[in-house]
Image 1 (cartoon, helix red, strand yellow):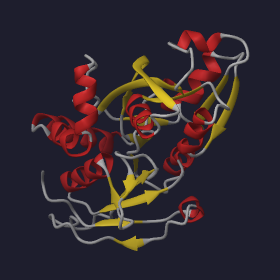
Image 2 (cartoon, helix red, strand yellow; image 1 turned 45 degrees about the horizontal axis):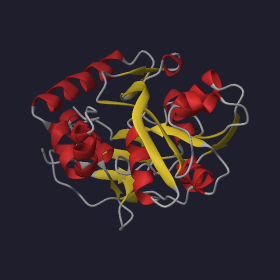
Image 3 (cartoon, helix red, strand yellow; image 1 turned 30 degrees about the vertical axis):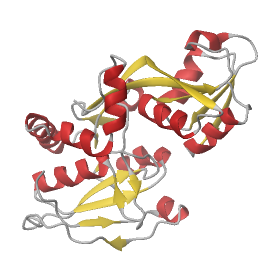
Image 4 (cartoon, one colour; image 1 turned 120 degrees about the vertical axis):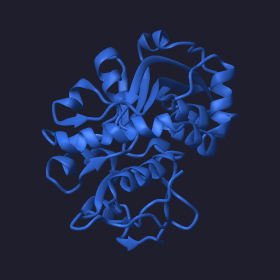
Length: 274
C-alpha cells in the first residue's frame, strides 16, 4: 500500500462525550498536504472493529481507518479523523463539521435524502445473532408473537426491524455490545446487525449465542459526501476504482479479516471487500 499522510484524531462535542480528545497522531509519511489544502476531515464511529476502532495504544486502526489514510494520500491531504457516535455522523456532515463519512455506512435510499454517496467499496448484508439454544432458524421466525429484537440505533438493522417486524418489541442501544448482551442473557430473541459483526460476536460468545450468517438483506457500504459536492464525490470514486484495481481491498481483507474471509468463502458466501 502507499505511504499515508499525517493523521490527526480530532474531537467534536460528541467525541468528547465518548472521552476521546484531540491529539496529533504519529506521522505515517506520505506526500504531506498539498499547498493550500486543509486536512481531510473524515467522521468515524471508532467502536466497530475490525473496520473502525482504537488499538491498544488508543490510536485509530482497522480496515476503514487504513482506507481513509489511502484516500487522503490519493488526494494529497493530511487525514483528520473525527470520532463520534454513529448517529451523529450525518448531522456533522450536513453542518460542515466533517468532509466525508467513512464508517461502514450502508448506502440506503433514506440516507440518500440527506447525503450523497460514492460508489460502493464493500458488499455485505444483515444477519442474526440468536441465543445458543434458540429455535430461531431464520428471520421469518422473528415474526412470531412476543419476539424482542435488539438493534443499534440509527443502523439499517433498526430500520429493517421497524419496517418488517412492527409487532416485535425493539430494544435499541448506541453500543452494539449492549445488543449482544441482551441476546446472551436471554432478554432479546435476536440482534440484527451486519454479517461480519455477527460472525465475530458469535465467536466471542460461543456458550450463549450462535450466528445465522447468511444475509437476509444484501447491502453495500459507501463513503458519504455532502449533498451537491460532486467534485469531491468524483475524486472519491476515482480513488475507489484505482484502489480496487491494484488489489487494495484484497490486501485489507488479508490484514484485518483473514479468518472471516476464509470462513465466509468456505460457506459459499462472497467476501465483503472485493
